[in-house]
Image (cartoon, rainbow, N blue to C red):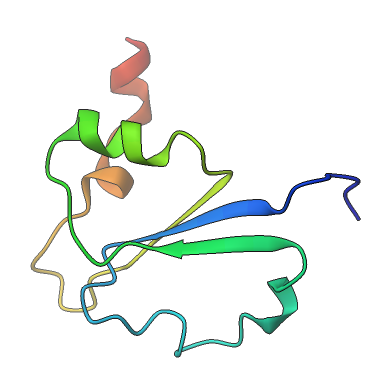
Length: 82
């Protein structure tokens, strides 16, 4: 177990249906984490970076239909490093 004084900060992205916290049992994290759910989508990468800088963990919604792409997940990490 971590000796962190503050809780781990978790961001849940693109929960446009506002169901993420009701679809799973998050109670095991109550004393160890602060969960923030974002219901909106930010298309601007700089805005996404600014929003998520203070978080330790980022959870993304996965499109089950396969028609939408999430640039946070789809980004090629090697492209950024050259």
